[in-house]
Structures are given as C-alpha cells and as structure tokens.
Length: 188
Image 1 (cartoon, rainbow, N blue to C red):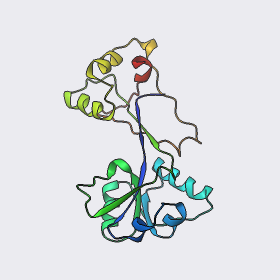
Image 2 (tube, rainbow, N blue to C red):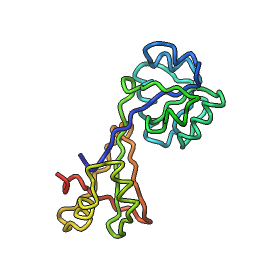
Image 3 (cartoon, rainbow, N blue to C red):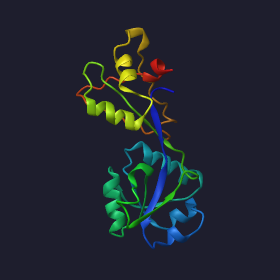
C-alpha cells in the first residue's frame, strides 16, 4: 500500500423506469445498448470503463463526457442516457429520481489516495474530512506522520502506465504545493 486509500466501486445510473434497471443481471452488452454519459477521457476512471469494453470486444455509445458526477447525473435526469459514475456520487435520498446498479462485477474499483503537504498545518475540519475518508487516520496519527523524521517519509511511487487505468489518484490538497506523504509506512 502506497498510502491511505479507499476503493471506489462504479455504478450505472438511469432514470427510474429505464429499461436497464429492469434488465436483470447487468452486463457490458446491456450497457452498450444505451447512450452513455461517462467521465472525461482525461480522468483515470474513464480508462477503467474503456478497458472493460475493449476486453469484451464492445463499443460503448458514449454521447457525453463530463468531469463532474453531479453534471453527469443532471444529464441522466434530462434523458440523455445512462451514466457510469463512482458509487460515492449516488445518494438514494437525494437522487430519488434515479436508480443505481452496482457494476463492481464489470469494472475493477478505482483507488482513491490522500496526499498531504507537510509544510502547512492542518485545520480541524481537514482532520475531520480525512477521518471520514479513512477512519483509522486520527488526528494523533496524522500529526505523528507529519512530524516524522525525513527517513520515515516517502512519496508514493507513480503508478505504472498499465496501472493508471485501474487507479484514480485523488490528492486532497488543501494547500498550494502538494507534497505527498506515505502515511501507511508510519501507521503500520
């Protein structure tokens, strides 16, 4: 493990009553039948989606791409198609007019990592936010990691090109210059 991370599963979103929600077991073939809204090509999550279709010998019908899941959900609500988004973007209470189908059997999960800048101090709300992401990273653990001697620190390696389609790197940069910290080494 190169740093604290969470796995992010993908879901397929559609308007209530859409045929894909009634199709039974979700397959790539089923998804490929409908106009699809997905992440912009510059986002790592898009590579995961493209790779799955390529391996199955299918061509998805991508009609729109966006950099924001809320925008993708808005397009779905307007009837432009279905969307493949991170599961964290779907809230059944807020998105009551949408249905979601987990697609973890079709797409590998993306990894979300946290990066910190040790040259800046963290505010209370930042500790709270990080603990929501990774509950084992308490304020005490983070403060210890941020003040560790130089030999204890290591930047996580950049993923190999082949891994970039499998990982979404999210650097939670609350500061101007990001300096990743390998908290995992200190938290073991």
